[in-house]
Image (cartoon, rainbow, N blue to C red; front, side, top):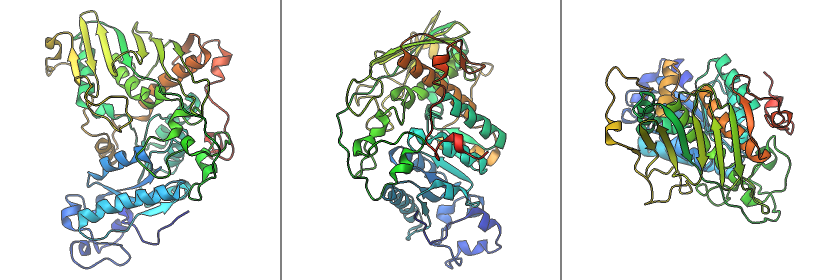
Length: 468
């Protein structure tokens, strides 16, 4: 564990003091590491800021944190990671930002090797969880139990059982949880869903989703565990396996794609990686956000050798009780295509790529929103159905922490979208059609498939070992 001796800018400590005025002068408040000038504070003084701890300071998280730093309602005060080098980089990234904002050296971010110690800090209001996928549900549940509001990267879980537990705990504790399915904050995905649900293409019949697989990888020999990495904790609830760098994350870079994304032990591959984004967007237009398919059938190629073992090329077919069929394959353009009795609408991210490894080749992207007839895209009238509007996933999260209103990507909707990913993955593994009951969240008369709703957990890690 690494604990900075510097004190942080605590919202609650500011509330408990009458000396706020000193922040606006050249006199430092005793015990605080730096002075925050008015040009940085803006309309939100420290007493009103949401104090945030960052859990998992790797590649994906840097974008989420930068997206949050843009809002002066937020104040990052802590960072936690099992890799001491990475948590140091995360601390530096945040402190460099505040230093540029203040015009003077800022050093006020505590660091932790175990996020559970961070959760004990009552001065922290919220946490941003951007860990590897097998470490999503547990810290989110523990943060909810600690009364923290949460920003959680997708997928929300790696099993349907732990996803259900997460949703139930979050709602019971009444904390704000925003899932990182940021396509909901991209105008074209909202507009596409609105147009479909307002009948612009007639009765919706089919949805086609473009989603590629991952390549296989090489064999990799065992390597010494870096001294800066708590590898046992990094493995978490998953089985013990030998350390090799391409199984985990690059030691010399925070921006390159980590190898764990292509290991089933820690994730399910693109079906959960990008799948939750597109299945969530599709459900918005299908009006199936709080339910799921009634059957799923998938075929997939899996590597026969090499360290990386997630699915490659695949195709799946999901059928819904409302008569809609959803087809997913790497053979379709990356995005969501709604097909109705009177036309079609296609929506994609366009040229936007969250990282260099996203499955959108530069210069080959499709237009963000297209349709079979330009008239389909005519703006909505006032009396048509309008969906939730958000311009920023992180900004919406912060607004909802203040207002206590439901965010644009709440936990239950996130769990349902993730469930589509996971039942598809189970069908891939079993290689046969499955009947799903979305109300009971069970496969119908299929013990083998139901045994895959959860997976063994290695003590003391895992949601099975959380004290509720």
